[in-house]
Length: 413
Image 1 (tube, rainbow, N blue to C red):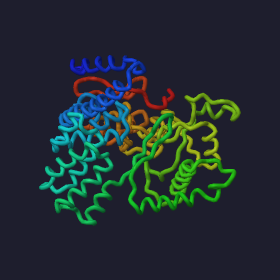
Image 2 (image 1 turned 60 degrees about the vertical axis):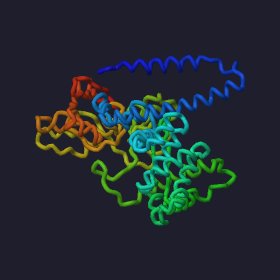
Image 3 (image 1 turned 60 degrees about the horizontal axis):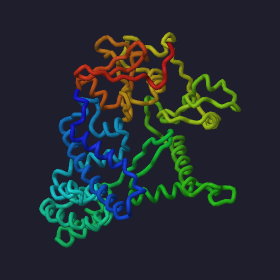
Image 4 (image 1 turned 120 degrees about the vertical axis):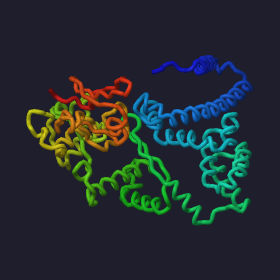
């Protein structure tokens, strides 16, 4: 595997270091503003280069061969980009080559990456016979239009050309933009963003208003409006989980599950619990001990013992079907994550590390939760998975390189 970047990138990095070393406070105003404009132009040009490289890597499945990840998930899991950011970069990389005027403008630094993304998205909604004309008009407008105004300009240009969409088509296009992104952020918190359809927005607005209750606006309620909406959204979700007829997940109804280290349970509530022993939610988010104690006041307790000698966590060779006890124990042990290092995709299948067809046992020590992609990778993608004596998951690529890490919760001997 070649691990050295091309020399041109090394030179670019050195040039950037030289710019970073300048004392901007010593620059006159004219030089400062001119330099900022040049930096923004270079940023756009760099986006164009990145898009071309991402497109090449995606076409060749380079990140799959090198890291066992698709290109988008490589951006998320190795480069720590948010899902929306990674998705936007991949769409630009895949779609930009079809629009040479936009691609050329971005490469020249005449438009920003955000403007290019909006133009490409709008052009894809245009009839093929007018795309060339609309593309040139949009690039010209980008000299003075923000991304938001560019998106509005698409329909204006189409109407002028006599190729405008009717109201039903416009509504369908707006409906296609719906979506919600839910991501884990710093220190176990989460972020929520997205675009709602009018009816979903109105339903959520009414539900949040009802969940806020009579305390909203009262003198003793010192929360901000945003904090009240946050708390109301949590109440709506909890109510749904408690009362709706939900399908089974992992063989049981969805529920909020908190995993507590046994040692932390023995610490008096007045004492501080070390952060490494904080309870965690099923998805791995840490909870302060006082929050876990509050949840435990109205909880269904699910004790799990990671003990291979009890028999409860072993089915041996009699069946390849996992028991609910093993599925839940493996889920808790690994923090509800795919076993592949840094993978953030949701787990989909409980995999026999040593395949059942090859003599593997149906027990906790031979169980690993995998997302759909990495399950495919170890069955059909030429990779293999094993656990070593330290209970680490070790993935081996087709060329023999190994990627390993321990389970999230160390299993007792």
